[in-house]
Length: 314
Image (cartoon, rainbow, N blue to C red; front, side, top):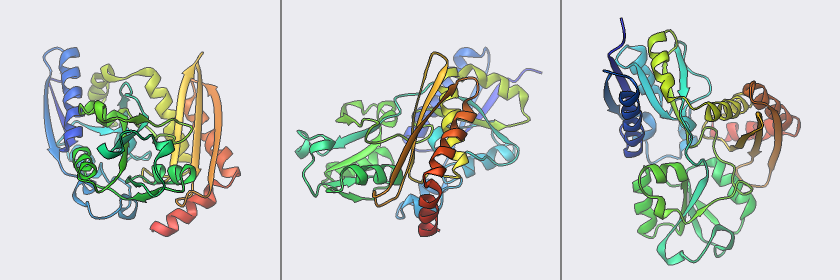
């Protein structure tokens, strides 16, 4: 019997709801007579706002509650920002599809008094807000003269903290700002030479039960092939390094002439060590390209850097 209803589990943040509503509208537009219902909830990462993300632990930080809904048959799919979805999923669940990617760049958002500045010429001692160890490590490597402070909360909360004068600037994902209608707040898209983005950043991942073949078939209408190949290569790179969402691992990827070009980096949190390399290969085997790149960085000392970070935050 054909499926007539789809139940979506999602976080209740404004950004998560905007992304989930897009999924709902796309499914309803492409699948005749489908009824899509949304159940929003808070995850552990949404509830704990007074502790740095890396110190909470990141396995399922923004996904575990949504996955429980599916495993208990209370939801059919979960919509995630792909960068928040761990590379190893619980038994019985699978990454059913990856949507077309928004700009994966990191973005500089400036306090009004500093609007004439770019990241490269911020005055020494400027206070930069970020909750990401990946951004922190790369920016410390490139701009050791700046002061970095942790900032938590959703996008709107972070913008309010910036505008109240707590920070001179903050770093956010360009994709989130664009989806929330805050594109005008993007002062600078940070070049990949300065900050490689998070694995999967800018794309949505739709998770579902691995044995629910009817649902898997339905959500294929949301799949974007090029984004999928790029993100599978990125996720393979992260998985091979045994890194999580909150460690200083960054990537950049592209496809040209059926070849995937993948750049990856691992950095120490103090910004004093940064290892970067590239891997190229056929787009028909994206996961191998990610593994190859991870092994290149391991040879150059990536595992030692990551071990030091895990010990610090364990």
